[in-house]
Length: 230
Ligand code: APR
Image 1 (cartoon, rainbow, N blue to C red):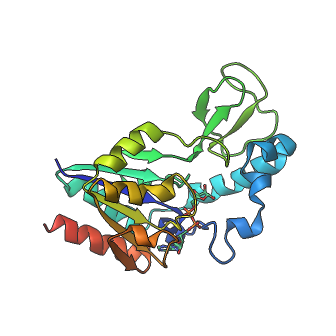
Image 2 (cartoon, rainbow, N blue to C red):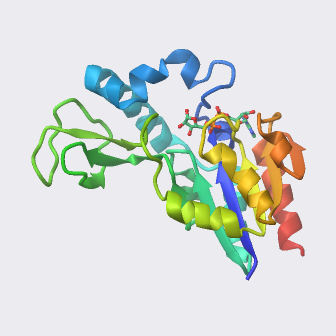
């Protein structure tokens, strides 16, 4: 059965109004990664980190899928093979568009995690320092987001998908964060056709046999129509 594996990054949600990280005025221009996206930053100032994710959680709750998310859901519905989305994003726009088989390797804004017992539960819209874990009671609730220096989720399954894909597509990612930035090279070496749909060259564009440049809301529906017309 043909297998398509699609890696998505912040660029696919840009046209839904959610900021990317490294574009002009992106999140990492406004906030220091070490303050809001590391365990050390959370230990140092949990209030700052909760406020950062509370704002992103509220924004994501208001956001709606754009034609790129919708096209991937249409692809999954019409494709008679195996389709997986591996997303670096922590928003739920793929799910809102109707996609399933979505693996969030960096966690999700809709999740909360206990720093003491690893219990997970649906995150309230607002979290604050000292919030208690509903399971063990420890005042150790944190966003269920994978921070720099932590191990991304679902990696065994993701590597298996990457190594067995017939088509590997990367959409809206700058290719600057590993392990996701290595997926195209591994997939290509294992025989996949690798295509990059992105507004501009990622730094690993050379790992792709095919690159298409433009906004995801235009590129992805066109690409999906081509696949479904085969
Ligand atoms: N359509 C397509 N691509 C776009 C669009 C758009 N409308 N807008 C921006 N892009 C592209 C940019 O050209 C850039 O290459 O999306 C990419 C966004 O790159 P980043 O901001 O680096 O986001 P991403 O690659 O997802 O970052 C990966 O870094 O900080 C960590 O955990 C964070 O998951 C994130 C990871």
